[in-house]
Image 1 (cartoon, rainbow, N blue to C red):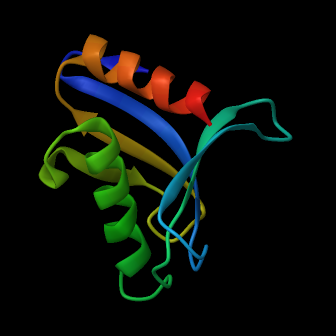
Image 2 (cartoon, rainbow, N blue to C red):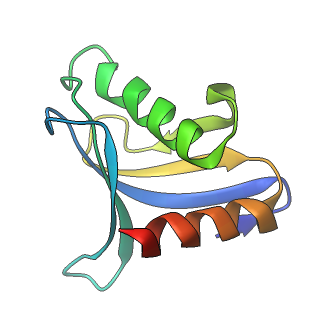
Image 3 (tube, one colour):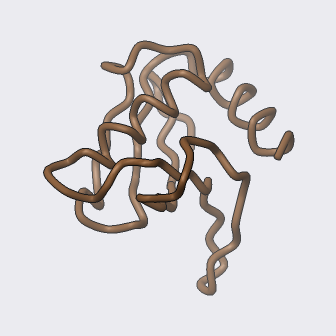
Amino acid sequence: MATPNGVVITVRLTPKGGRDAIDGIETLSDGNNVLKVRVRAIPSEGEANAALGRVLAKALAVPSRDVEIIRGHTSRIKRVKISGNAAALTLALEKIAHAR
């Protein structure tokens, strides 16, 4: 979802996933689409959340400080706000999602 100063996306995070990677789009049982991301970090003391921020920042070519978890800090399903040019971020997310 585009916002005036970035985008907000829903992510399904898999900690201890063996590698840091974006695995594409998944449709949940409720019909909502999420971006699947796996990280090597464990879900302890915010390590997996920090790794999620780094993976998204690298994939979208934005600073890590521009990636913020706004909901779901202790859940696998998270809402993430990415600050920047909404059109450019949306295009980059579409490319990432369809390349997997």
